[in-house]
Amino acid sequence: MGTRSRAVLIGLGVFFVGIAALARFYAYPTLAVAPADQIAHTVSVGKNATIFSAADLKKKTGVELEARRTVSGDAAAAERISKALNRKVVVFDTAVVTDDSKDYRFPDAASKTKDLPLSFVQERVVLDAHTGEAVRWNPAGDDDSGEYVATTLEKVDRLKPVQDSALFAGHEGLVLKFPFGTEQKTYSFWDTTLRKAFPIDFKRETSLDGLKVYVFEQEIPKKEVPQAKPLEVPGSLVGDSGKDSVVVQRTYKNTRTLWVEPVTGAIIKGREQQLATLAYEGEDKVTATQVTIEYDTATVAKNVKGATENGVAEGGYQSKAAQLHLIGFWVPLLSLILGLLLLASVGFFQLRPRKAD
Image (cartoon, rainbow, N blue to C red; front, side, top):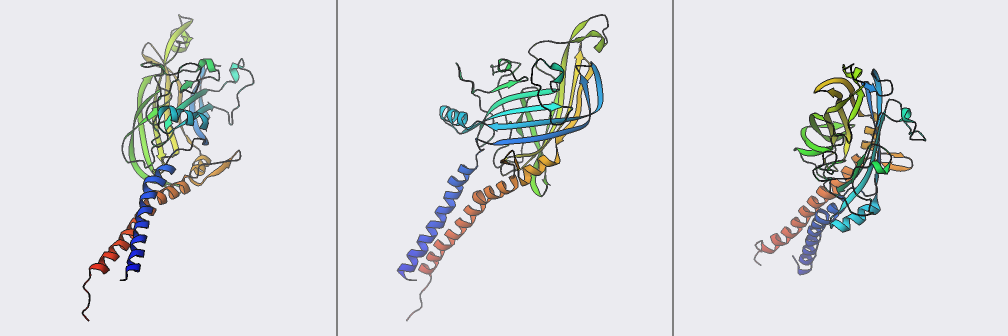
């Protein structure tokens, strides 16, 4: 082999090894981050639910519930907080409205209490852009970019994190997504109702609409729900007719199942089997909510294949996972193999015995 040919092969070998390193250690980490400006909508449906009507003070059965979640990224806050913490984070505002009417809309006046939804939760969360884990952020002063939890639209009702608080000590664990490169292991996942994280275990691998997913399951044992002020109901409701009103405690338990695309860590489908009760003197008296509620088929299809909602592209994690897997696995692997083969060929031709003249 001539000197010029040997130099060309060495140059190509070094080039492809460099491409492998660049793809794996620069391109992949750059792409494997949650988008700071992401917008997502999910719809969950729970058929044949049992609920307690606060307006009528009676139980309703055979109800169909619909929960609509909106997730909106705050890119400006994410950039500011990332600089302050010296780590890449994303900031999301979430809102979940649950009601027994489809496509619920809030009344135009807060005084219309009979028109308020059965349940409403608003949160701001700060997450590590790579792992999806909650990051504590509670700035002082007039900076309102910190995390919070609220059950009304009023800003004054927002609960900001207080260390060791029973109401809200701050987000913890995974909240809206799993890490890029999700593993088959146990993670810690946030529960908004109890405002704390519980273990969520890997159960099996399966597929949804042709997309490989990991199935995780979380068992949340029966717990008392944190309340800012005592919850009072008529005594007759809980079998104590001699009292006009009594203080009850709301309890809650849940079995949460999540279908997760492992390359991106995106939650493709979610299902919850909830049971909430009103307990009086340590005994359950009223079923507040009993329902199995899960993403509808349109939401699952959007998460897999992608769709446009309000002019914005959402979901499409099948193609996103394929692209990320290509950059993070196949490009580095094939480039490294090709580069090493080229370098090895130079050594082979250099060292092989030469024929005598």
